[in-house]
Structures are given as structure tokens and as C-alpha cells.
Amino acid sequence: MNVLLFNGSCNRGGCTFTALKEISDTLNNEGIETEIIQLGNKPIRDCIGCGGCRNMTEGKCVFSDDIVNEVIEKAKTADGFIFGSPVYYAHPSGRILSFMDRLFYAGSAAFAFKPAAAIVSARRAGTTASLDAITKHFTINNMPVVSSSYWPMVHGGQNKPGEVKQDLEGLQVMRNLARNMVWLLKCIELGKQSGFAHPIPEEQIMTNFIR
Image (cartoon, helix red, strand yellow):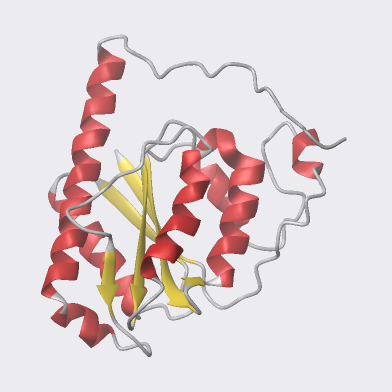
């Protein structure tokens, strides 16, 4: 089994990475392979709602000049996902939102019915609003949401990962989240082995009140 973790911060070794590393290490200790994918500081396009991906049988975004399509390919063989972001102005980084909008619009099939979680780092406020914004991608794509023993956040501001390491409660929440991910992954695998597959969604009904 393997889990992909995404660092939505431009800082490769900052606060968000430190939280993701705590999760990754715990998953590894439980026998789960991991990869932390750095979104980095190169431009990531917004989704422009062109609908071009709907005409591509491979499940790809029409824009191929960043990492979105590469990640969709990786997601096809992954078993679970963790999306991490710093908090900017009480919301996730614009980088991770642009990334996720295109990722889920073009490659939703690669993520459906696989467990996922959101984690954030912040100096003080805006954490729950940021978690909500990220998690909404999961809850409209038939994905189980992995919870923890508290809201999955760590304290760390101004790119000071040392502050995250001092947040013992936050790190504990990350470890509990990782163990819950392991538990859910193993439950899903046992279900598959018993012939109990995920449900088949009904054909989508679109209710449009304004025409």
C-alpha cells in the first residue's frame, strides 16, 4: 500500500513539510509506503473551466506544463492521500487550491473511493476554514475522509519548522491521523478480499433552477 502526501507550501522543508513528515514516518512504521510531493515554487495554472479534460479519455488536464498530469498518473496506483497547506489570509495557499481544482476536475476517477485527509499549519487563525476548503474536494468525489483526535493542524509561523516540533499536541494529532489512515486502508483491503467492493454511484442528476 502507498500514500501520496502533497506539500502545498513553497518552502520545501518548512512547517507544512514538518507536519507531513511526521505523518509519513508514522505510516512507514506501519508498513505503508509514502512519497511526499513538493508543489514547489514554480507556477501552477488555475483551472479555467474549459472542459477540455472531459474530451480526453486518459483523464488529463489540457495544460501539461506543470505537475498536475504527472500526479494524476501517480494517483491511479496510490491507495490514499494527504494534502497539506500553510494558512494564508485564513485560507489554503493559492498554489494548492489551483493544483487541487485541476487535479480533481481532470483526474477525479484516480481519487474516487480512496481515503484522504487535509492538514494545515498556521501561526494562529484560519485553520478550520482552510481545512474545510481542502476537504470539500474529497466530499464531492466519493472519498472517505480520514479524521484524527483533533483538527489536523500544527502551530508554526513565518517558516519556522522548529515551532512545529515544539507543538507536541499537533504532532500527536498528525500521528493519530496516520494510524487512522492505516486502519482505513486495511479495512478497505480486507473488504476487497472478501468481495465487498465500493458502491457504484448513480448516474449524476444535475438540478439547474436557473435557465
